[in-house]
Length: 138
Image (cartoon, rainbow, N blue to C red; front, side):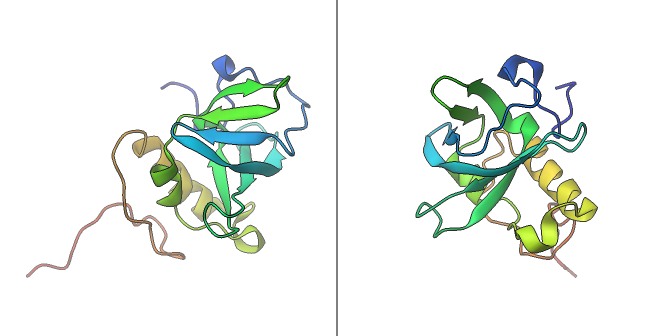
């Protein structure tokens, strides 16, 4: 994986200046919602997905590198992550996390390492860099 998790993969079919707002987003195992916001900033590209009833009306941020295919005719985006991997991501709050470097690093680490790792427990909100699950053993 030589492309950054924060850039649209060249094979995904992203065309710069395309408005992805409203596109339906599909995980590997089903629909997760629609794009509410997206970024075209090189090195910081992402989509924010309104999950509707799927996870009780929350929004999730997905780095552009998780996108595997964009279909402009059907207005759908496919991501190479399962619903469980997306649910297990650090919780997103658009008022705190848009442009937040620490959150972007934490999320990037989750999705870079989570591409098949079977992550099942979410990182508690506000816990920077807590992917290393070390306990305090004596």
